[in-house]
Amino acid sequence: MNLYHEEILEHYRHPHHAGTLPDADVIQEEHNPLCGDKLTFYVKFSHNIISDVKFSGEGCAISQATASMLTDEIIGMSIEEIKKLTTKDITNLLGVELGPTRLKCALLSLQGITRAIHHKK
Image 1 (cartoon, one colour):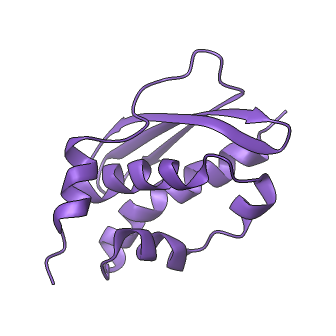
Image 2 (image 1 turned 60 degrees about the vertical axis):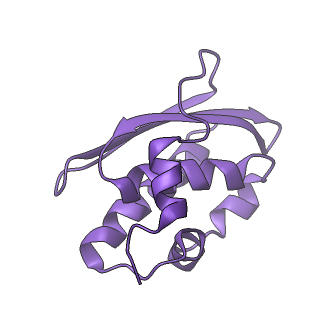
């Protein structure tokens, strides 16, 4: 199985929800010092639902593709639904098995979104 299968490469090359939200309710920055991946999430809430989300960043194909895929998934989700997301949900999104180093890259997005919902005003 090829780690960088086509869907991951497509999200890496043409990420969904890339950019910023000037009126974001929460801005959450994440950094993986082990590999240098950086992500910033811009989250807009409507009550307890994510109504919009954007991200910017740099890093490996796994971290950037996961951010793209996860932002696709979470628009319209409630804070309670997001709190239930797990490592397995992220690996299912990617559709590949990941070693410990790459898993940290993939989980950077989940970490960022989880922290963002905890900072909701």
